[in-house]
Length: 76
Image 1: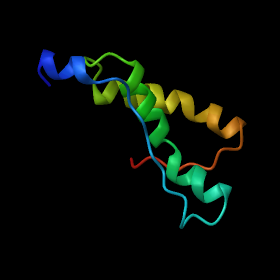
Image 2: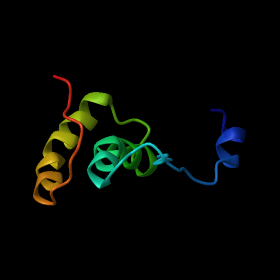
Image 3: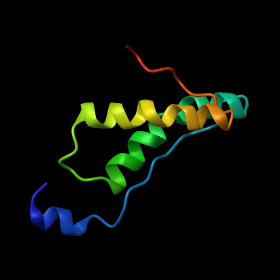
Image 4: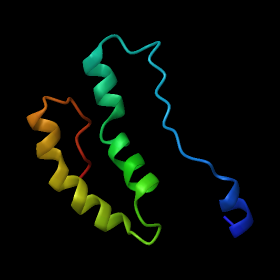
């Protein structure tokens, strides 16, 4: 984006339409690790690389496990 376009951005949002997700486990599976990536982009530096994100995400997955969050496994 150009500097003029960047000034127009007021924030970010991450929609998840739940009409066809039958339970909380399905919602978690669709939301994670997507919300981790969203937070990375929303609050992180634009210079951060994909590899750096994946490293941080892999370190974060045990936290999701500890909370019992059902998430989509990473593709290796």
